Length: 372
Image (cartoon, rainbow, N blue to C red; front, side, top):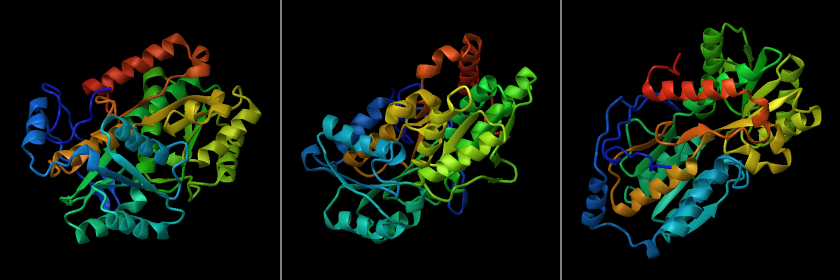
C-alpha cells in the first residue's frame, strides 16, 4: 500500500483531490485542491527539522473511545498503527482505554503528564476533549482519528476518510447480491463518521438501480432527511442482534451495521439464520479476520485503514512541526477499500465482480460520483 498523503507530502506525480467532510459543528470544507510534491521534500524536511525527535525517545500514546482496544474494529485498527510504528520506527507505544466519556479528559491529561511526544485520540467523540487539551498545551502534538478541525489547530493533525467511496462499492455489491430486493443498514450514533458509511451504501444501491434497471430498496437510512436507525451506543451486541432482526423481518437479506462491536450481534444472528437468509457487511476492519468464528457470514467489509493513517501521523510528528492539518484516506491512496469476499467469493457472480472493478475505476477516474 502506498503512503497516505499529508497536505504537501505526497509521491511525485500523484494527484489527490480532497473532498468535504463533516465536523461536530456541521461540515468541514476541505477545499478541493491538487497536491503534487516530490518525496524528496519530505526527506529534506525531516533532515532539516532541528526539532525532529530520535525514534528511541519517541512516545506515541493512544486514547481509545469507549469501544475499547479489543473492539475488533475502530480502536483496534488504530492501535495496530501504533504497534506497527513500534516495530518499524522503534517508538514506544502507550495505551489508555476509556470506559466512559468522562475518561477522555483525564486520560489525555495523564499522557500529557507522562511526556508523550504525540497523543493519538480515537474518534469523533473525543473531538472536544482533544481540542481543549491542544489549545491549553500548544507545544504538545496531537492527532485525532476520524476528525479534523476548521479552523485548524496547529498542533493537531486530523485523520479523515472517504469511507463513502468504499461504502458505495458495498452498496452496489449488496444490490447485485440481494435476492429479496431489500437491504438494510443501521448506525451506532448519528454522527458524520458513521453516516458517511451509510450515505455511500445507499448511493451505491441507487447507482446499481440506475445502471441495471433494478429497484432494490434500502432500509435504515435516508441521506436526504438524515434520518435512520441508530442504536445510540457502540457496545451492545444485543442491540446489534435486535436491529438486524427487525431489518430481516422487514425483508432485508443483507445488512451493514455501522456501530463497532454492536455489529457482532448482527453477525451472530446471521450465523443462526444462515447466509441464505442474511449476510452481513462489516465496517472499519476486515470482519472476516477480526470475527473469525462468524467470518463466513460477512459478504465483505468496508475498510477504513486507520492503522495506515496512524503510522503516517507518527512519522509526521517525528519529522518536526506538522506541515498540514489533515491526512485523508481515499480509495486512490489505499486509505479506504473493500475487503475480499472470502468464504462467499463463489456466491458472487464473476460479472458482478467485474462490475465492482469497473465502478471502482470510475470513482478513481472521477467519472462516477459517490456524492449523489
